[in-house]
Image 1 (cartoon, rainbow over the protein chains, first blue to last red):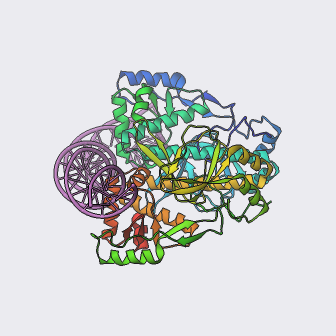
Image 2: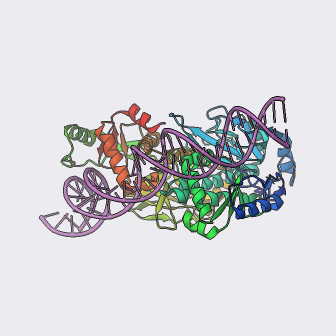
Image 3: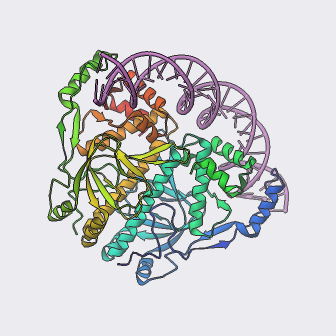
Length: 273
Length: 273
DNA sequence: CGTGTTCTTGAAGCCGTTCAATGAAAGTGG
DNA sequence: CCACTTTCATTGAACGGCTTCAAGAACACG
């Protein structure tokens, strides 16, 4: 029985689709920005421009075929581009579409009756959103930044699953791992200390990006501070303060759309991982 | 394709195993306790003893057979009894056993490096614990109270799944729903207000118990205050205070090993559900 | 009935939120 | 490329809620 060991599926979570994922250098930015920051920052910024600001582009099932079945599945999907804040789907609507993030980051969230938003996860490249069996979306999803995704019709996806029991197993294991990711998030949110929440979040993001591209000291944070706050159950002020504090202690370095790890072991100690 | 519509599986979550679940009246308790509480309490307490304190006993797959396949599966399991705090399994150990809770409540938890415990869920009657595909337990599980469970060997369970693709689908949908339950918990933990957390927790437990037995105004809380605190990311004092506060406002009534709902709509408003 | 555990409740202190203002970055149109 | 506007991030001050510490009450067990 083939369990599609060469790739993994995630309805939302933190695994790449293909083991052949690769990163490319892109998106340089002016080093003249962030003038308020000191020398170390400037240096790091330059290093960033030189090699570290990676736009992750894992091989999409829409463009890379490693098996006949994968090829069949790929023919069912269609690549789409999304501008920031473009909706993928909304909580409660019929789940007629399944997405696979191919570049960028998606926000997955639900609203409370008082209007507050809880981000329940981030969809990274390779993650699947809106997987069966639920016939209605349990949460909303939109683009946290400019992103692309591969789009499948739910009915075609289900037909494919029915014809490929092995593929169903693959989807199942993906969902099970996804569950583990969500449980880890509960460990995060259950923390009493805000500093530990932020630190654990950074480590978690680092691990997830490392699965997609080569591990790097730079952890991309394409989402805004408000998104991080809504994810961790903290106010935007507390997120900002704790990031600043970690930066002041030289544990991390704040860079545009991300952070750079300076002292991972200290961060792990703070995170109580 | 039969998807075993007549029952549902959960690796941990909130659904019953069989639709034939039923509740029985049991465990009366002395009305002379809780003397400090007022008249309303005493009355409610008596009512409780008369009819409401239900020990939930859903039909176990070990004792009730509704289909040939179910019968085969049932023959693989063995019923075991556990005293309070007895371990089912530990995080990180090889997952050689799968459990189905048949009576009582299990605590599912992980420890942080600083020794603090995060309860990531409660296993109610009908819930499955330790489902594949992970070959190591992602969390620990023990008995929150006196409980019974049906025990399966992982290898036998897997063989059964291999021979019954429909059963695999059933396990898959169970895991997917389980994921939804866990995401709901994230909504809980992301709350900024402790009162909302406690209220939402009570409503969640009510819904889960309602799926097992007939809906009742009495919600069993067999776990201790410390367990609830470790679940919600609150100190034991805050849990106690907020329960007391809800009781003072006549929104709930605190009874031994549970609470009684007096004003559900107000509770829902507080919970921001 | 006595002992150990759990639950409740009070007081003090800290931490995170809220409100608000400043500063930086991104988007827009000339 | 620059000026303008809008959005986002940072930071300060004050308030409020949660935790901590601690004591007492209620309960569970023999």
